[in-house]
Amino acid sequence: MKEQEAKRLPRVAIFGTSATVKCLVPNLKNSGFKVVAIWNNSSENLEAVARELNVPNWSVEEGAIVKQKDLYDIIFISTCPTSQTEIAYNSLTVGKHVICNFPVGPTQEHLLKLVKAHSEKLMAIVCNGLKYLQCFVQMKKHIDEGYVGDIRTVEARVHCKSILKERYDWTCDERMGGGILNIYGSPVIDLIRYLTNLKASKVHTVLKTYTTQTKTICSIRQVTSDDYCSAVLQLENGAMFSLNLNSHFRKDYDLEVSVCGSHGRLSVKGKDLVGVKNCEREEHLYDDRLTLRESSNSQSEISGYHLSGITRQLNSIKDSFQNKEGDDLYDRKVEKQATTLAQAQYIQGVIDAMVKSNERRSWVRVSELNASDVDDESILSLN
Image (cartoon, rainbow, N blue to C red; front, side, top):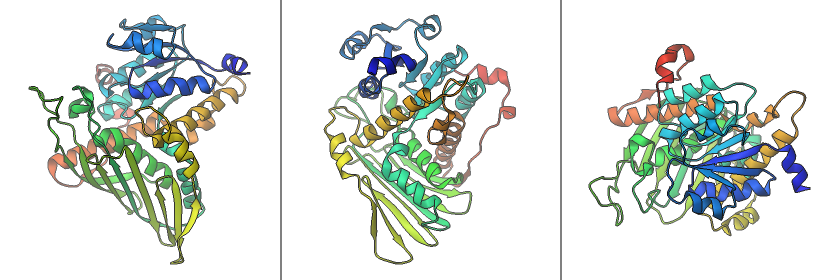
């Protein structure tokens, strides 16, 4: 049965050798996808990772995405933001489906480049497992049904361990897209947009880099990426969204989200959804403890929290290819829950405004670039 499913599913190529890739490939195979190649900018550990994951083809050759375009149909990209947009752009221009990770690119201009290169026939989305966790699916359902009434305040808090690795890499450098705001803030801001259907209009942000060196990162280069973020975002209906990100805890990842409105409040703690309506007693609306225990058994470096959501998103992507109709390459219903490139551009616009706010120590308006705002020549010159 799996072999029959694999024939109906697109062939997958992977770009990157991160911890995300090491958990992504087994999940892709379990979903019925055939992983045919793995590429990277560096040869370090590439062959070992390919053999470990039982991927038949691997290469560090520049331009392999274009030269070997007949080898694959869809590419999953998990690498530093400064190179991720160029890889995605090259894949889109040769007619391939693209799935990226947050943060997608270093600036909103880089995301606009992808938006302009994207054809509607191709799937081009960003992986955000948070939106596929049932606690948040149920939270959105209750918000849409009017459980909280008019949204007034939103709070999101992330506590996690340091995002720095043993060796200096892009996560240490703010200019390369590192930092807790980019890495963990981006998917949370995307989650709040998904839950509330509201965008941020202006932001006020404080970013801090408390850890500039570690036991293994102690040479001339110092860490410049932020490890703490405290921000307030005003949403377009006047509601206030408070975001706190702190990577000075020992826990892998802990997320808490609350939405308060004119009629009630909804909160997700761990993977459980609780609510209070019209000043009544708190009620448990969804309990996902069993899934949490199952996910925690994973030996991946990725938290069970994210892994559970990523697995569900992969199943959604699989269904979109199997349920396609007519001449469509995939079922576009997948984009109702997935993050599109245009939505990712908005997220990057929020991140850019938050960085500016920290530099100016003042409120900054969120601006979304349009295709007419930037000429094609300057967009294509971005790398």
